[in-house]
View 1 (cartoon, rainbow, N blue to C red):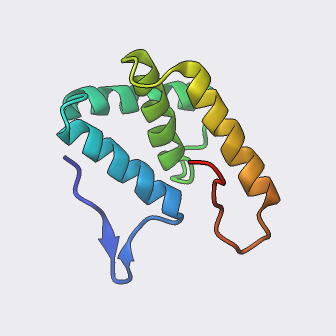
View 2: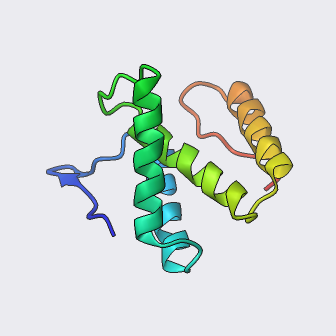
Length: 110
């Protein structure tokens, strides 16, 4: 399992969703849905693939790779239907587009 990086102010997450993606991956692994070795391999492949396509590798996209890897693994293992995943992505997009700047984004139907 990874060690949560911290600085003098606390965790290094810039956005709440990054912490949530991090926690979700750890929780799913601890629940036995995939091994941490499997997760690490998939995450590494995702990062490598994106870098070949021009990802700047400046740290800003790191947790986007976590999210992408979670989506791929959950779909591949049939833990979520692809259509349901796409629906949730659409719901989040609609929610954040309706949310005033500076306010937390909330889904109306969870």
